[in-house]
Picture (cartoon, rainbow, N blue to C red):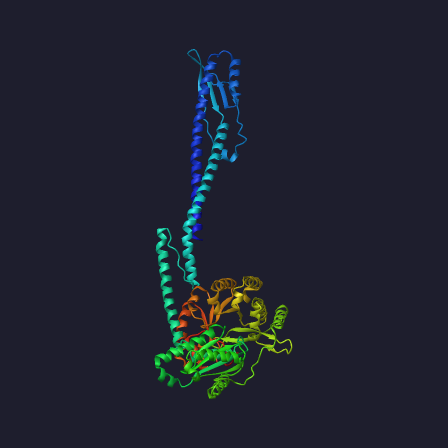
Length: 637
């Protein structure tokens, strides 16, 4: 039983006891007073009647008449007149009880009326005796009305006192509830402060809780700063600030193998010829400035296009990775021109080669093809731009056709589900990661999500498509024992109607099914719409659904956002996982991330693990699971 309920029960019990005691004391006091008054009335009337009869002692008819007249007033229960020898001359009785007073009240509070007596005289001789007993009926009526009034007034007083106590308790309860909510938030890995209560007794508790939260926040902030520093050291070129070769190779590997990646793109590779000579002629400081300006230009193009990445491969080689772009000679010429403008005298020392790629290509093939184009550009005397001859897959359908295809597929539930294993490091399944594929209307060939998702985003169909994916995933849950993970787009999370439709759909499912459902959102939602993401996670957790973040680590400043979100798991981006067994900096970074996720009780999963070496190192680092090609070798049947 809650403290406030106990307080209320104590208040009610005290009020009832006070009422009962007050009612008893008041009623008994009133009864005693009425009994005294009735005795006085009996005595006075007995004396008066005795005096009147004394004057008519020899007239029995007059005696009877006077006694009857007094009795007929209705105020007396007994009038008895006797002679000196005790013989009754006249006796009148009225034992009627009041009709408007409950019998139980009469039984609980009996009124005892003493008989008043007076002597009848005839001269100096006693001629008889008068006995009169006042009727208790009127006393009972008066006592009953008094008790009723007392009850009403005490009830009104009790209600007023209860209302006042409710206000007081609510004010006392508010800071206690705030502290309770703070404790609950801490248990859910959300660290919030509460205002200092007005009540002195509660202040030490609130101060202690706030102090603990501040210390935890400070510790987590320190860890976050350390993680950001490790990210810079592990994946950034110290001179230019661009991504380094290790990070870029992870991104490229992900783009070539992930189902969610765009199906094609272009890789631009730029080289400063004879960097050693430039450094000798310009000096190190001027050369570093030139490299920084070149990096800024590449970063500008990358930041202006979603999913693009600029990186420095080595001292003189830079890349601009452009997923979703087709070969465009004009863009390449423009890119080279903007870079050459940074140092016009060095324009002949800059070469640019580029090549398209398609999903499924090997990393070595893409790099070799682009490097060949770069070598060709270097060999040219005038035009320092060259493209590799490679025909990548191209999206041939116009936008209107894609719109019709997607609308029909959503309406008819024409998508096909594929799934990939996510394992713990004992080879046991954590869940199956479900991806959508769309049959080509013309050929029937299954197209990966990276082909049609950009068009779904363009036509604002992602919420409808994600809802269809969840419906398909729920059907899979009913036919298999493994848990299912489904990707939800950040655009859908921000859509209020989508969240309502999803909640309606999930409320129709069993609790057991919902506890086997995992929903994951791209890390960009942490930065772009944290409020909607927080609301979404809260709604899903109430239903028993696990919510996680995928591709974690790509965004700058995402780590502090985790502290206020009750996430179930993270999937660390493959760019940090690629060759991690050979990358000591990334190992330190993963260790730091693991320290935070363990403190927050968040499961951590590595994305796209490819080799035995990566698997073993991640297991040593304490991660909870992994995705990627190597899971096919590690799965226990």
